Image (cartoon, rainbow, N blue to C red; front, side):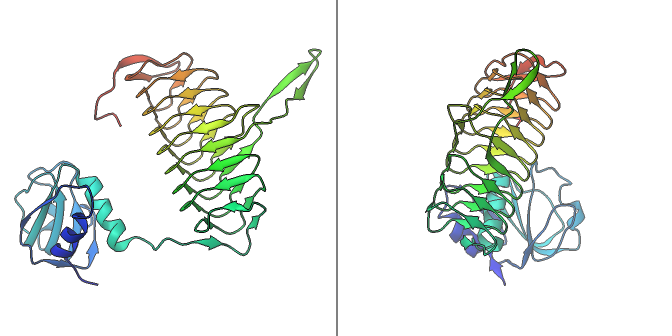
Length: 305
């Protein structure tokens, strides 16, 4: 399939991205590539456009480059797509022209007891969806996912394989100081719209009130969200993050890989927890906390996330 500069510009006009083509506007491409694996007849992107960014493309031809500015190059026939958001524009183009067609329907091996799934929800193989689960339009549930116990999932969410949502949390009391007795859980989980949850992540139901995850939040693989956690909107929780019970994470906060947040603490708006940080006290808004135990280091900058 040949894709022209004009095809791409026609698509981009339907989006909110502002893009200006500069160079040979008659180019047609067949594929995409990274800067480290250059190809002819391909589109690529540059995060920070520097003089030697396209040095490996010597000998290539008919390329489209998404970048913040045009730079010198030895490509035979090149067109730059100039934008302030090269990453967003590049991957939007890939999704439009090379993205997989969204699937819908329920796999034959899935067990779905609920009758509250929107018609265009997708459920993968060997999933279990309990009778008290609600799933909104456009949501995709990958393979081997278990969802049960008063779970409400919004629209256009993506739940990756192996995830468990709605399991009881780790709640016990000591009977006469001698043995642990389980605290039964009666709450559920409420997940907003456009939320992504990575593979093999566990999200516990609330003890009485619901565990909550806000709109547009993205949770990576192998994360643990304990009972009663309250997660806001646009939160980013990266691989192996652990939120202990009743943690509150406000809008825009970020936890880097391996971050652990002690129970009943708050990460305030736009807080940032560094790699492997063990948080033992609240983190103030717009503050970077790192270390073991984590301590406030400085204010968050645009380059942190």
